[in-house]
Image (cartoon, rainbow over all chains, first blue to last red; front, side, top):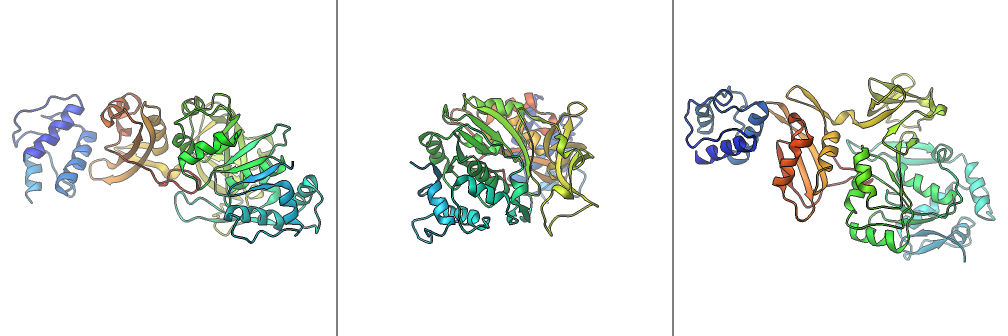
Length: 73
Length: 364
């Protein structure tokens, strides 16, 4: 999941938000990381490029744990 | 020596043209290019008298013709449409000038914009230098070596030839795509002696209005023939060519070209209604985003498209050609200064080339 964390930190950095050394599954994408819907759209695109999965398609995804679950099928 | 009418594969003079129309010479010979044959043949077809004495006689006879010209739209957003246009309608906005002009032909000849340039040169007995089909390096060379003084092209085409300065050019005309004042200024730095014109024309109706900046007004003669409804330009049947492909709403045709008024009478053309997408609840004009990114240092050409997205409804995808010495990271950083958050492309990639239509517009 290191690649996932890299992608998230990249988006945080590009948007002048605090990056994380360690992510928790419980981290909420909006409330804890501060990502807005435009950042989340970027996240879907980068994850889709890497894993070929649209994480927001069909399911509700709120936390890091939700993304991991989606990626692990 | 007789004045040269057309420079392509050969140099064809006005005498050659008249000899061809009179049937004194033939051109069905491999030494002539397709363009040369097409142009000479089109002119011959529009001439109803058996013998033409000189250039002014040729023009008189053509003005009396009932012949229609078959035109294709560029098909930027779909299948090309076929329109039949009268010669009279096609030349209604062409001005006769004393100036000695050398026109660069950047548009394909069988499209409205190409015919406009052809007839402009023909009516004024000027020289026409073909650029269509040549690569950008050759075009740059031809503009300089043939002393081209007048260019009419899409903003996209100008962007592709801005590697050098063209002191010989006296007039540059923009058409076919959105063009802002900023862009016009940026481009005119490379044409230091040229006045800038902006033209609004359509295949369906020909050239309709022109201006020296990026705002237009509806000319008096078209007051009851051009209407702006829901920010879109509508044209009356009287000024539109014949076509089975045009969808009529009563006597009116919706061009799909969007405008925004800057005061009671003046408006800017801001793009096409088909290029508006909804992103996170905001209406975004793809052409406006392109023109904002285009202002940034290092950007040679940019294309913005949209793609469905599960979070925002749609997202923007950008393709960019940049000049040497600039990086995508810098360009991306600067975008934040000129774009709203919802206008920033979610995905941006550097490309070597961007596909254009035959007319030189960005293909969508």
